[in-house]
Amino acid sequence: MTTEVPPLITAAALDVALGAESLWSGAGRRRSSWRVLDVRWKLGGPPGREEYERGHIPGAVYVDLDTELAGHGAPTDGRHPLPAIEDFQEAARRWGLHEGDSVVVYDDVFGGSAARAWWLLRHAGVRDVRVLDGGLAAWREAGLPLQTGAVLTAPGDLELSFGELPTIDADGAAALAEASDSVLLDARAGERFRGEVEPVDPRPGHIPGAVSAPSTAVLDAEGRMLPAAVLRERFAELGIGAGTPVGVYCGSGVTAAHEALALVVAGLPMPSLYPGSYSAWSNDPARPVVTGPAATGPAATEA
Image 1 (tube, rainbow, N blue to C red):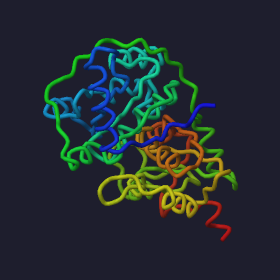
Image 2 (image 1 turned 90 degrees about the vertical axis):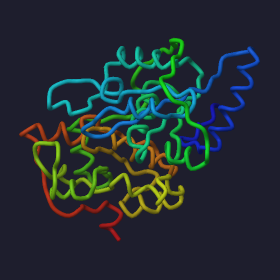
Image 3 (image 1 turned 90 degrees about the horizontal axis):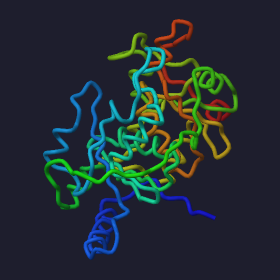
Image 4 (image 1 turned 135 degrees about the vertical axis):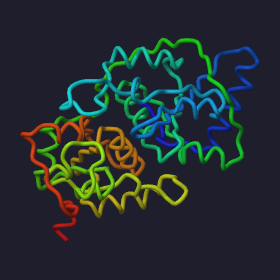
């Protein structure tokens, strides 16, 4: 029986792992099995490569979310549809990934783009993937060193196949939102959910029946994930228990992965992720949208 890998790793634990691997591999006995991916990204750009080259965790390889963690299609596919598995496998090999590697992903904001890499790698069959809790800020706050410039790594040989994690399409999202015993979480900021602002998608609002659950609400003041017990209580207030069918979406499928991460940290099952998310939904004129205050989950309405 395999042991489930914790979804988070602290800066101190990563430093110990990388230090031990450096000593071990430096002796010439074997290649390090720890791979670190820098997934810095901001909505609207610019790409994070320049920031990465100015300073990153030693040995980290830069990952471009827009070109390596997303595909491109019609507006009804969403702004960040899943990449083709062939393209994603090629990217993972460029990053130097091999079967059995322990992969750590991080970014420099709240963990949303790192969580996209975590979710995609898990979905593609990589079991040992962890998000650096607190991101690059936590590494810096611990007084740990940074490396400048790009890291060149030998190509990997990882074989990937999508299908390890549950996903839903627009019909599936609608069904979860409509059912009395399931919950569809919207991970965007509350003002976008309510339709007060909409900076990128064609119609403001949210999927009818969805529950507002901003992904930033799962973090503490330092940008680290809240304790599991606190997260479980938060999700219970949204109507989610261990047996509740849950779907997650956001603007384009990136932040939804961070909500999925929080659910897993809370000890709840992996939710179904809607890759097209609201950008796909709102580009389909046949799909209704609503505005206004956040909905409440089943448990809250029964209380």
